Image (tube, rainbow, N blue to C red; front, side, top):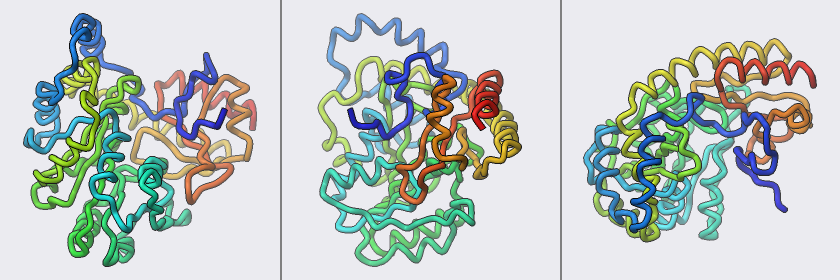
Amino acid sequence: MDRFEHGGDVYSHPGVLDFSASLNPLGMPKAAREALLASVDACESYPDPHARELVGALAGFEQVDEAWVVPCAGATDAIERLCMVVRPRQAIVFAPCYGGYEQALAHLGIEPRVVLLREQDDFALDKDAAGSIEQGVDLVFLANPNNPTGRCLDRATLELLLARATDVGAVVALDECFVDLSDGVGSNDLLATHPNLVIIKALTKSFCLAGLRLGYALCADGALTDRLREAGQTWAVSVPAQVAGVACAGEGDHLERSRALVRRERGRLAQSLGSLGLRVVPSDANYLLFCGPVGLGQALLAQGVMVRACDNFVGLGPGWYRVVVRIPEQNDLLVAALKEVL
């Protein structure tokens, strides 16, 4: 069987402590669990094809117009739909970045232009990147924060990139799937003035709904949102996903507690990794990218701990790994396992 290139494959390694999937360390909110249990009978009917209650809840959660919300079966679905709708002649990705962008483009036979971020700059995306957005570019992928580096976008840099994309007529896909668990701020306030901006989000990470596949796109361009809706499968968002999404939209306190925990534990974990001689990239997110010995991932797996090997990320290579920030006692187990194998 081919290697699964993403994190979270606990099915191949039952019983491991999973640090490979960057999910909320506090797990699913109680309200979402209760809503899911109560939704069993509703699964006998088809889902609302327009996900009306979910759209209203997400619009309130994001403080945007309901017409701007396009529910999808996970962020990957939103990315795939956007690529199908735009069908770019030229697309840009800034690497290392989430491989789903290139995968969605590859399904259409499109090979993106890859702009490599520099390790000596801790993979930060700066204003010079705007020069990469040239005439002929139709689609630009950005992330705030970036995956796997954890770096958030500086607002001035983002606005400069958006302005340049507008000048050349390009759509900007801004992946903010991890922003609600980061030190950064979302970019929804830019939607009204930038109709070429599509923000992609998922409740997968923020509320630990990975198994339900619930994401969405936000865009103020009515024609583009209509096409994004039409590009999806009928009943793309299941009854359980819609129900859980509505429940999570009212769980702002859960997010606040999660962010506070991530902020405390990220610093402590980064310091512990650094004290072991590992090269840790500064992060604003709920995960850390670090460089260590080749083969470290397999050695940790033998200790019952699974990390995300990042050798398949363009711009990285063997020896790079990503770990999620979990609760204190679990982070301590990771550090203990690292001490054992290093």
